[in-house]
Length: 113
Image (cartoon, rainbow, N blue to C red; front, side, top):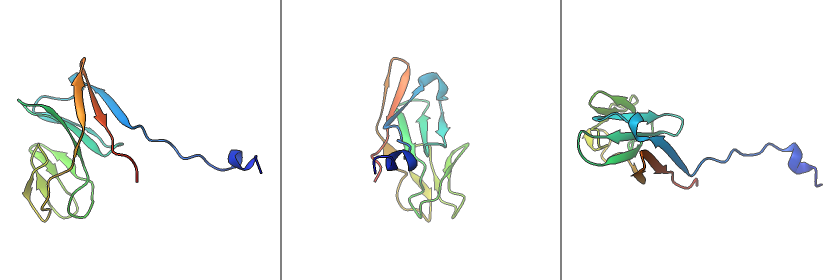
């Protein structure tokens, strides 16, 4: 009975937070981290922000464009802050908690459900 735990695959534990160098985030652009489904955006002015790249329409993964983000499934467009420019999505992309300190950006990931 005790051997069973060695014979079953273990679930990978996702990190609860991610750290990236601030210098990797382009000013006026975004660093896309597809393995985590998020982007770290940095405007020409203002704070660093982290965005969940899940489209708020039907959950497709949005992609970064020159002017923000676009959903390849149904055509929703979002600006660089994740605000809806055109639908069918009606809600902005979700924001994630992030903080900048010592030349690093720390993004706190939501708990898995």
